[in-house]
Length: 445
Ligand SMILES: [Zn+2]
Image (cartoon, rainbow, N blue to C red; front, top):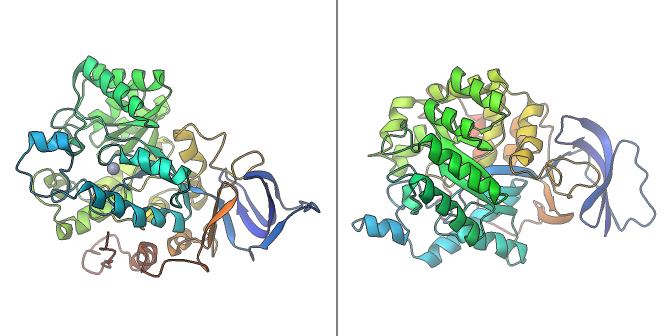
């Protein structure tokens, strides 16, 4: 199959933009791209994209798609796994496994319609993310490429213990990594913060190093959720490929990350939603006091320190990780990055080439250049002039050179989160925005 897209504002994911570009795709791979490309005679399909912005398929490094918006991180729906029930038999709320699975399906469509063609699922019930990955690969449902972490590794009582992945001690965490590889995960997710206070350290240096050592021995990347400065420093020194959140990071922890080449996945739109909308979704009580004491300004401060230190920023949304940050709002990350210090081009790189580096797939995805997999996200408007155009959802999306989403041919009739996200952003005022911030209603999954 040979395909030519013409008249594109090509934004290649590596920092270049070319107007009126042509992109040639053959058998799911980019063959040529640029301003002066001759379209071969045998091209089967020619598509004029009418000057729209054509980006590499976007990468969301931090999602929790299993169970949709019935978030695993809140007190109401969290405690679903058998292991957790054994420890906490009184937890009253849990969804049947079938409902968890079915709620996943509409959530996965939200990624596609926003132009996201690769995701890391960083934690969910049991190892359902591996099944989701396989179901998409088998063509049972349309979706992005899924890289699954399965059940995250955490210390006893640590953050994320609700998924049942507690492991302690050098032998314990090494076995936990091996078990996950046996279950078919693509990467290892670890929680670096202990509980119940999110600003404590979950693991010793030895435990952190063992997790990284065993993950890399099994040829898996590994990422660590860290809020606290000391956790960020310890995880970076241990050699994790990336660190999630970094919300309580400082100039000191940012400098350590920079020196170690650790990539940050700041998830700041997530912080915004938790702090401003969490109570509405029942995110109150033990553990959530942390957010009351932090405030969004502190998170922004930590992000600015990362940018100032030159730490590479890669995009992760954390949608589905809690009830306040809902599926369909993934790309709200990008306007936040621009607002607080990245250029539009660097924000796009965060969601493309830099994100591809985090998962060691930069030889295959994350940019539009000959030889790479033909994943494309096409948007109306120019995100180099106004990054918030991505909040309107994609016009068309290609994965492996095949059209997997077309807004004009959209098969879904229900309201989608991304439109509401765009409206929310247009109303956005960082200070005192609590009351005017729009309430969306994607409550159905
Ligand atoms: Zn998360």
